[in-house]
Image 1 (tube, rainbow, N blue to C red):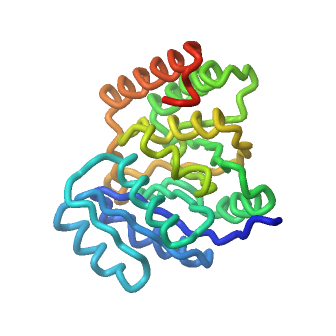
Image 2 (tube, rainbow, N blue to C red):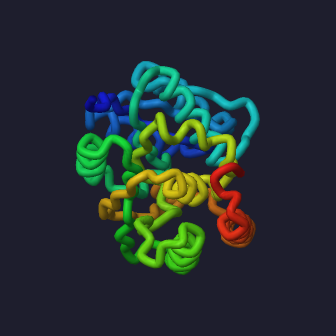
Length: 242
C-alpha cells in the first residue's frame, strides 16, 4: 500500500524579526502549510510573528529551549495534525528554497526516506562552518559504521523528515544545535534511507537581517560531545535502545 504524502513546513525561530516573514511567505509560495515555532523570542520578533498568524500556525514556547527543542515542538504538532512529512527550514533565510521542490519530490518518491539539503557554500560562509562540516561528516560516517556515509551534511537545517519514522526518536535527541546531526544519525540507525539534494547557502550579514545563534565555541563543543556519545553507543552495541 502506498504511503500518503501530505507535507508541511516547520520553521524554528528565535529572534529573527528581519527574515522570518520573508521565509514564511516563500514557503507558502511552494503551496505548503507552515508551522512556525517561536522559541521565546523577544518583543521585536514577537510583533512580527503576531502578524503572521493569518499565514501560518504560530506556536510559542514560553521558555527558550534551543533550536532542537523548537524543531521537536514543530514536528510533534505536524504529526498530530496528520501531516506525513515536514520540511524543516531555518528562519534566517540562508537556504535557497528553490531546492525544496526537488527535496519534496524525493520524499514523495521514497516516503520512508530522510531528505537532506547538501550545502553549496558561497564566500559568505564562515570558516568555522566549513571546518565543522568536514569534522561532522567524518564522525557521522564513524558513528554509522559506514565509510561512505549517506549523510552528506548532518548540520544542515534544511531537510524533509518522514514524520512517522521520526517522532518516536525525538526524546532521544538533544535540544540545541546538536539536534540536527543526532536525529540524522538515529534515523540512519533505524534503517531510514537518505537522499541528498544540493542547496545553495548564503549567510546574511546583520545589516541584511541575518541573525545566527550558533556559538562557535560552545556549540562546537556540544556537538563534539554528541559524536563521542554516539560513538560510545554504537560500539557498545546499545545504539538501538538508547
